[in-house]
Length: 122
Image (cartoon, rainbow, N blue to C red; front, side, top):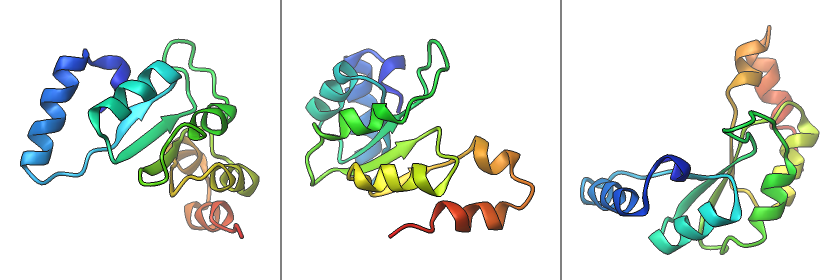
C-alpha cells in the first residue's frame, strides 16, 4: 500500500482487511510524514521508496535517513534505485532486511548475473 496515495482512514481500513484475510502488507513510504503514518498504522513491513513519486528523482539517502526512525521489529525494505552491489550494501548498512528491485533487472541483459551482483554483499 502506498501511503501517499491513501487517506489515513482508507489506509487503515485496507490494512485491517488485509490482516483479516491473513495477507502480508508492504506499506510504502517516501518521507517522514508517511513513515509516521505507517508506524501509527502498526505496519510490520515498511518499504522505503527512494523514488520521489512527484519528481521521479531517485536518492538512496532517503532510505538511509528514514531507516533511523524504523523500529528493529519492523521488516524494512529498500525500494528503487538499487543498481550495484554498493547500493545493496548501503541498504544493508541502513538496517534493511530486503530490497525491491525492478528497473535494474528489466534493463539487465543477464538478469541472473545482475541478481548475483546485487546480492554479493557481506
